[in-house]
Image 1 (tube, rainbow, N blue to C red):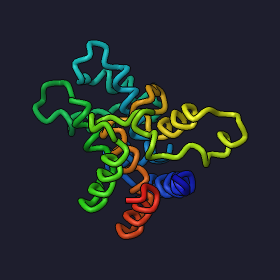
Image 2: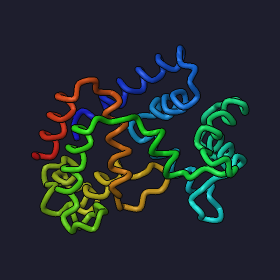
Image 3: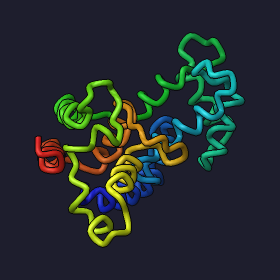
Image 4: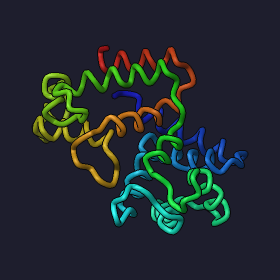
Length: 208
């Protein structure tokens, strides 16, 4: 996972620069999330999940607006309204937030998606579609971690910290879904221009 924080900083800078000249509401929201690093979009997703009081996985405009505010994204009401209408394709007054997050995620080429899914499948040893501490045993070697070596952390703590980097910032449950993994890497991917470099980075990081 080396280099991710460096990519995060580069990506945040790039997103801040692009924000200055961008007027498309969807792209602006995407860039505002990316200024928070790879987990920016994922974090917004979790905020929306908390907003979704009746757990119907959809949001009305009031919830949508509150979600954006709670996450600290500054947006004029008319801009937010234009954005909401973009997602409310059937004019029902609500938007499906899974669909919203998929649209918001920076697009990844097929080749990039494929290598991310290869890494996910390798990590998901139990094959249940979720990466847990249990899955990491045997794939990720905690013994090389400096905090494990100096006795500060147990193996379990090393694994949890590792999972936390993919998990959502506000609701860490120690489980990483395929969706969260893709969300995380679509953020990383946004900071890397070359497919070849991204794929090489993934192969090296996960020994694919």
